[in-house]
Length: 477
Image (cartoon, rainbow, N blue to C red):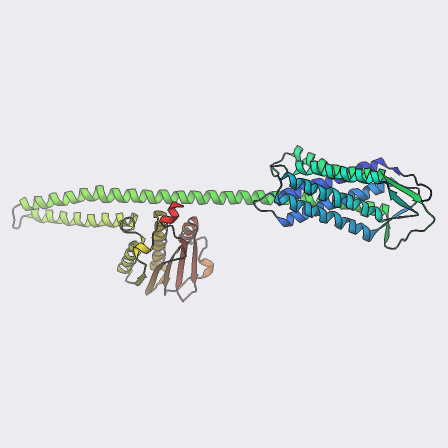
């Protein structure tokens, strides 16, 4: 070597380089935290975090180079500078992938510290030093190389243990700031330790300045990159926070509304069952007793043209009609056939009642009852959907033929109702006015199923609902 070149530092830029490292560490940790926020790791966020870490390491180094002053002009070979960034980015990505798979593993943290402190920070540093172009040459003292690399690895281990210690997603602002400072520590400590072991000497040989930029230009670029990184991460994280909170609030509202709807449907069915039972048992028994007493009274009255006998018979007829109305109301509230005989019989009964009431031919295809085990909630949901569908057919379809098919396949129960009526425009199927159809869809969704309505004006409508089987095996699970 020639004459030794003595360098000096601008300590304002030294301080700025440390701030740059802290900012890069903070941005990387924030993005890594978002990558690991859900049940599954988001690799797009993880790659963004690795890029942020790499920008912080790279920018800190070249800001530190800008702070170091030699008595000769210094240039940087920019392709080698780009290579140094690629080394940092690749190492940061590898470290984050390792930590994402096992953030709490002791051996995992050691391996990640070696990768980040060795090839990552140290590799970037010495690759960047190779990019220097000036009227001279530089060499490295072996003891300082070992010390710089070991300092980087040890501090990386401390930083990674603190940064990825659980809970990673519920940290206070103080803990996040501490994590950023610790992540920055191995970067600037390794850099300035290595620089202390670097010897610069003057030589008469002119440097190759092809593809070279002044160190002041590259340092300015590094500072600008970190500034843009701060703004970008701040904007992205703020936007993501707002969207995530809004999405979480909206999802929470949906879940609460669905839970409320399910509870209201359950309560309504229970009330219907109770009211139907009370009407059928209490009121029906009372009316039957009245009818028996009236019949006995008629028997006791003198026969012939006695007006009292005619009035008593008229009252008996009113009682008979009232008993029929009570039975009809009770059945409409909660058909006894559904609870006593099951869904298959209830579907056949509903189709028969529909045909009797409207005169529209209704074909039914159902399996045997023992082939279709069904718990009460699923049976009720399918029956109510069938009732609502047949009501819509009677009111709107102007159909002449309806087909009802109940099947089971692959642990799924399917109910299909097809008519040959006038159909409905698809844009109106689940519109704001179609509350009945929305209710049918929600009933199916609450049981983990789906409702599909296929219709074209003039060609009829097909309603298909599919829900998980819900037999005895489902109940045990």
